[in-house]
Length: 567
Image 1 (cartoon, rainbow, N blue to C red):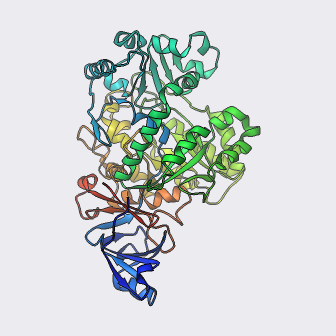
Image 2 (cartoon, one colour):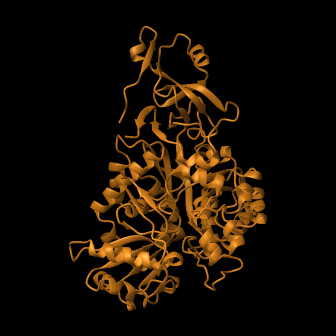
Image 3 (tube, one colour):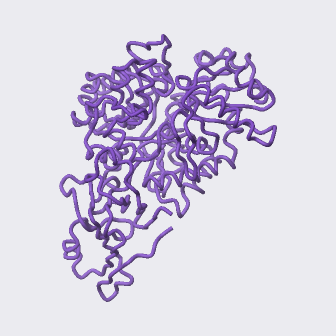
């Protein structure tokens, strides 16, 4: 909702003045040439000028204006950006039982962590007992095998043999189903065999489906999980969460939307009182899987036409595509050069040769490519592909985005710089998982060096942060805190040499995120002509101790020139 301003009037037509000036304790512009100001003038949705109050008044001359003192004691920043999250996954995890290795804060509730197997199974039993309807599905999200121990179908059957149970892994890349759920969905062992790599990414005895194996069950499972009621509730929860954390724009890369899904997005994400932009990038995995390369370009353009650039709060980015290399870091299915300490192996979401084929296809069509990659072997494959593309068909300002960037080597960071690629990382990985992955899977050296932030920043590579909600909290200031401090949930500093400055962390949630989308001319900083999107803080993030950055209260946001306090 908007607030009534405390204003001074200037000019004979001040009451209808097109310009409003907001003085502030401090304005952080994220503009190198004009880094700070104490007043900003806006006209409608656009920024007019950021300078001192007197300089702004002098600039306006005889033009009528209002001076609004709402932010006189506050700090104005460019509107925070979550470079990458998933509204469908985020909404659904916000609408089911959460039993995760860490506390999970959602609007109106804190789901307390389950640290071990005993706590997890106890919570799962309590969730089952808490359902009144004996036919109601039990959906829960947050299980992680390294924290909660192994999970099998027979374990879920012991919780209930007469209620369908679906356990959604913390990574969102895996499901475990009990026997009753499999029978309810009509899934049999025969129905999941003979499907190539997808069939290999299943374990029928355990009721376990992961990565490509999810394609064998999701057509049946999704209607049970994503009911209109649950999805609508979760989206509204997500809107509250994003606003409470100062988000003014997010992007979903790899968006596959049905007409029904997009209609709900328009109703909730596009609502008058939703104070942020929802951007989308087409999915180069699902589209090509379904239509082949021969039909991919037309289908990609058809997808983008659902909400073309400039069409309002919901927009697809034009000429941008999302591709996928290896598996999820949260379930340790990324492809690692030296394997894993416990002997398991990673997975490919798109095998290397096929990934190269798709990347070449979209590159030659002039698309900016965003590639999901988590392991250092996965990154090696992606960089080899980019290197060949640049050698065979060089393009200026291609801005190929390395997405997630969990594991890497110093030489790979140097290659990213040489290739002119950019990085959008999830800085929560070392915070949430470095300690556990030091014990199992990666070992201390690789676990603590996850997300090499300082290495990237020191080479001048454009660098942004994302939550990948629900992989990390959709809280940009907290994500900046993660990258700046690298303090794990258990309290130690993971890879202290990879900590970055406060300024680099704040740039990663503002101007650098906008740059990764090719929207730096309209978003991400406070400069003349840009959209008037601001996040309003109660304290100066440069003045507080870095370890307190995440605790700075957020007053609310300004979106397209309108004030939206957190209430």
